[in-house]
Image 1 (cartoon, rainbow, N blue to C red):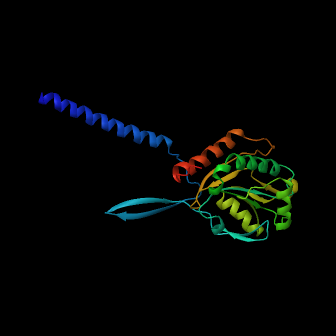
Image 2 (image 1 turned 90 degrees about the vertical axis):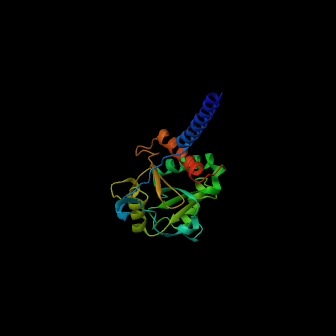
Image 3 (image 1 turned 90 degrees about the horizontal axis):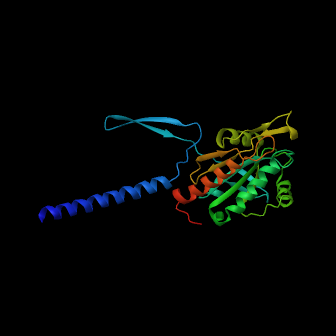
Length: 232
């Protein structure tokens, strides 16, 4: 009898252990494993006599721009939100209209998360793209979302910000149509300012990479759900 009771207790313990392992496994499967992107630094420190290595990734540095309403905005204006960023210019005759069409789709398809997402469009041709031009661009392209801001500021700083921080190429190119060349990619930035993904949604030939678009949407929602516990 005693042996039987011990066996029952052992079976219950094994069942509980298996249940815990199953729950942990399920949580692990659901948790996104989005990378941190950028040129990282390695910091070495001694802990209890052992050398520990920390990997430190960069965050988006402080910036100051004018939006389409001529209002000064900074990083702090958009704090505690996940960002989707692009670099474009209003007179772009090639990929910019396609890029913004894809951003409009993404904005519409994630509008239930609008309070937690900020779309940022940095112009790489600020000498032309004054706030009034960006405001007209919004109107012409049907951009009505309140969580989508168009930004204009110092050209050299913007190009550097795109290349070094948002991991998107942007710069002058006399041979490019419109005088500027830039990537057709979008950058996903988390609430702490870390770049978590770069998505080549628009190709240079004007075609749309549907797989990259789906990956961006999927990873954006995963970031909101599993790292910030946001359920719409």
